[in-house]
Length: 153
Length: 309
Image 1 (cartoon, rainbow over the protein chains, first blue to last red):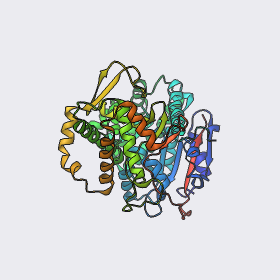
Image 2 (tube, one colour):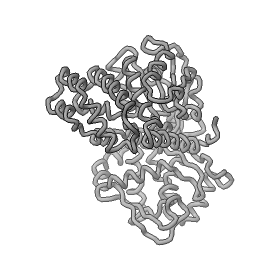
Image 3 (cartoon, chains in turn brown, yellow):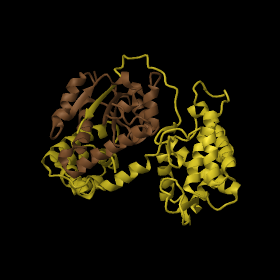
């Protein structure tokens, strides 16, 4: 659940806003169990993360590491969800991770940011959209190669 | 340029919005943006034409202007939206300037310190090649990896590299250990006028991007000013993280300063035993962290949405 809404409903809401082929969107709710699989993780271009996974006692050190080092392509979009709308958490996230993440505090904002991103990094927008995706893809390949995971499935 | 779509939010910040007001604005402009993107033709690139698109078809939309007015945004900013004159490119530049995390800045400062110390110890104008520069960084992290003081969490085989050192991953190239990110950071320092790179020999080395000529690296005037300004801080490292980092860097300088190219190659191979490794293999990872499994699954964890475009 995110913002009181089942994730598949959120995904459906994002899909409705996407131009072109909506079948390109897939959900992987088991993500937290595979955080140790860096090579798999970086092959996803959009991440939705609960803020508790980054701040406070429950913060996940793997995620913090990936964000603190150059282990995620810059073109990957990382949306961090604050479900209680806490300004304090927002300030902490922005202080610690700066513009590397984007904070969302509600369902409408989440759909707005995710869909804007996916409509920009989208081949239907011609050469610009294709190059956006190509840049992301190349960054992933460079990372996988650098970490010795070039053949990671 | 990456994350062009973020100009939607940056424009709102430029207008002075923050918190809930900024969120409300983003929801509205994203709605207009998605609709306009659906009807607009293809973009050749996400630069000038895209900025005009944002101004002409999104920011100047009456709904956006009305919302900004209702939020008591400064008149001048509202007029810029209404007239389609939001300085989109400037919002990107601001973001990029602020996009250096503390970790990145420390890397850059430590590189400046390396250049200054090496040229002083060697009594030379330059670090004499990009090859030597890369190997100095590698030797620094290698020394941290091998240093075991027990004063810092040290349960992994990475030694002090667990908590300090450059955040560069070194892979094996024909020239030995090489880090693409270190190369990029060197370029950033050059682009910001903090170091200078001059051709100092017509023949190259076997280093990446140094095959045709040899490049000497030295501090620029501005780089010297920057280091002088922070000289007290850099002379008196009070944190363990910087202290051990600096200590290893000094040892790396001392080890390589009198060696020729071939001697450096031999020294690195002896220390790191890289000769038998395959090209492309990771020789030394960046600063690591000791990971622990999260025991709390109640918060729902991470959810990813993937595009296969």
